[in-house]
Image (cartoon, rainbow, N blue to C red):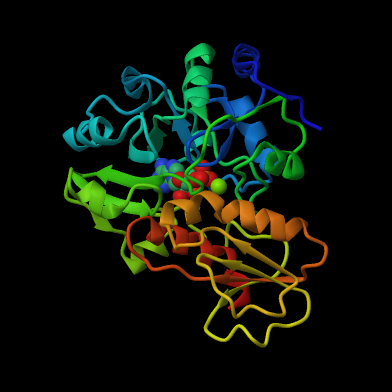
Length: 319
Ligand code: AMP
Ligand code: MG
């Protein structure tokens, strides 16, 4: 069992000593290490069993820290996006400074940076005295954690786990890249493309580029998956196989032969759906009466784009 508590100063001491800390952010739980300590960062990959071609997001607590992470010529678009969305769930990929270790960026010339808005995350970064590199605190490819027990379920070998007292968005940050004066959305997330376009012109990643490892490292088709078959529910709900778990996003009365039904929302409210998506999938994963999971799709507008992205990736192997 990972030692768990609310002692942010102790957690910061662990980071400063090159150890790993699991901590809440406003999106999901992160597994953090000092971004400037390559050995500590290497342990993140080891503990998560994450392939080293998948770069990490570096978390900061002060805007001035971008000067240690990005190259000296920082684009105006970066400042405009930071001004509009930080602290908050937007990660900005931009040319990196030489000080950022290669292991953080998977050897790329760019680094993803964000300033989380979660008070515990901000205090942890501040007290650590260093930017913190952190992916989600789950085993590679598996469900993202939004509760301390989700982290306990998947990881060991972590120095400390900070408890959360606040609500989480439930899906990961939006990732945009600012390169050669252009903004490209690499991963849909808690902030929609539409909101970003109100600040800088920005386009979604093209289909061809999303196949290209250089443009979209780590954007795998299969990701965020429970350890049981997960299918997207289309239409008929009467003929479910035996031992089926069903995840729904609005009240319905026609589910009669499921072993378990979990609602992420009763009214198709996308904020509720996002916050409860991984909680519902973890609960289905843990339920021994459930052998396969069916999940409703959601309308792809606003936050729904990120929710559907996670549902498609989580169910990718079962299409
Ligand atoms: P997470 O596992 O949620 O921390 O996600 C990190 C994701 O951010 C990676 O899988 C990449 O898709 C994206 N990312 C991080 N750094 C970069 C980068 N330098 N260039 C492009 N994408 C990046
Ligand atoms: Mg992740």
